[in-house]
Amino acid sequence: MIDKNVVTGIVSKWLEDKDYFLVDVTVSPDDKIVVEIDHAEGVWIDDCVELSKYIESQLSRDDEDYELEVGSAGIGQPFKVLQQYVIHIGKEVEVLANDGKKYRGVLTDVDDKQFTLTVQTKIKPEGSKRPKLVEQLLTFTYDEIKYTKYLISFK
Image 1 (cartoon, one colour):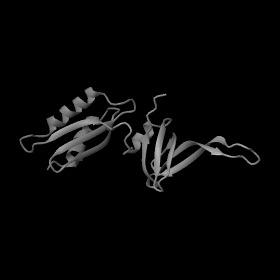
Image 2 (spheres, rainbow, N blue to C red):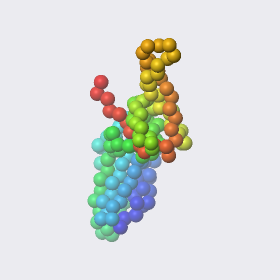
Image 3 (spheres, rainbow, N blue to C red):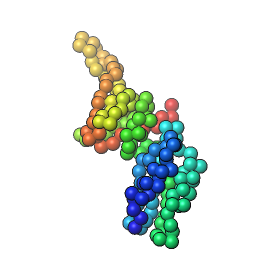
Image 4 (cartoon, helix red, strand yellow):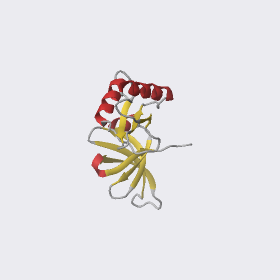
């Protein structure tokens, strides 16, 4: 079986001096290699082809046969690495907390320990007949959530 660390090293070398970043590498027991990369402005097919050719040039099919798939991290899929949070600052995301509650809001701050979401919440001010929409900041640590994913908007 092809070693995931070997593939990760090959991809990391290709990524040097590029604005792309590695999201995930998986290698199945039957040697299907799946590499996911991402970029702040999206992933171009030409770059996926270039990376695929580079990986193939570094692996030998004489030693082990494999299937290779190189692509972008799927839109609407949960974030897997910190850089995905960073490139989505200012964009609307969905967060599923460990308690089962879902939150929709704008990702406003990110660091390696936590992230902050600005959500719209209805609050009824004292003495008022109707609730008002107010912005509320919610901060989550990464272990308090099941996932965060980018929300696609067609507005």
